[in-house]
Image 1 (cartoon, rainbow, N blue to C red):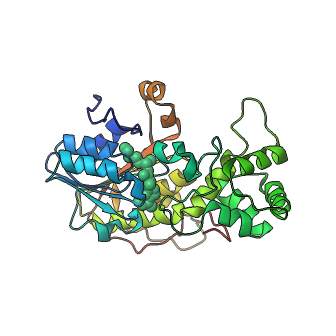
Image 2 (spheres, helix red, strand yellow; image 1 turned 90 degrees about the horizontal axis):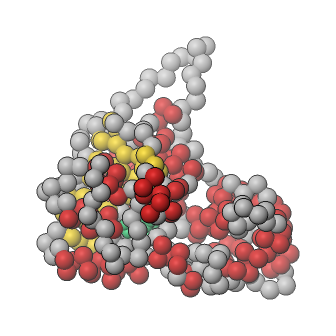
Length: 328
Ligand SMILES: C[S@@+](CC[C@H](N)C(=O)[O-])C[C@H]1O[C@@H](n2cnc3c(N)ncnc32)[C@H](O)[C@@H]1O
């Protein structure tokens, strides 16, 4: 597969698995594609350069300058719509041939200390992509101890969640926890740090970010909205960055993977016609991409082609979505 030109040397976010995403959405010439996670517009620009029209969504208003540049470069083929991808079928403004979702935070969001996504930089404990609703500080300072522990365990797979929650509750009795580094230091002091391991706050920050932005609800909503929007032959490509998200995408494309093993003593369950064909295989970054962009290490692409079977009613059943009482 040849390296696409579609990267913008000015873009602060390096698009991951770009060649593979373009391949999954092909043919692109004359196609109408919905980019549900515009970011710095790396995918959108590459899609436009390959001859597609693009309608792009993002919930973060700070991406607007990037969208304005693409509108100037492709005035008749690019449109930006602010909003969330969980209702992309309503925001698409007409039929599309393909949908791409690149889930998670952008490098711009991570790098701007005042957004509060990074435990490496001092900033307010915020983490809201769209700057509305509850912030991470609201959750950390207001959830009760059990709810906080459940959230860290379910959304961050943090095995020391109870110890962290207990330390947070003790610390906030004196003063609210309001900054990223304050929380990161507290977690490090509570559960320790082993040389060579990821920072001990990594899992807790992931959990809080997922809860603040309702990321699993958004992902499930976006997948089913794509199923409703795409007609037979339509393509869906989804890039995820951790195993909890990838499991949801995998089971969405192939519901049999999430189904309980059938017992020969029970009546056979009649399997429904598949909604997606050519789906299931997980693609990872090549060694060349890994060398160029270490962030691509955790990225997984799954893609599928829509069949003629009618769209399912949205359901969480069988998708393995982590549940956390007290999550946003
Ligand atoms: C990983 S970045 C996308 C980068 C993009 N593919 C590029 O090449 O520049 C993810 C973007 O999706 C946005 N986002 C995350 N969740 C969203 C949601 N539920 N609805 C709309 N946008 C969302 C974030 O604000 C962020 O800008």
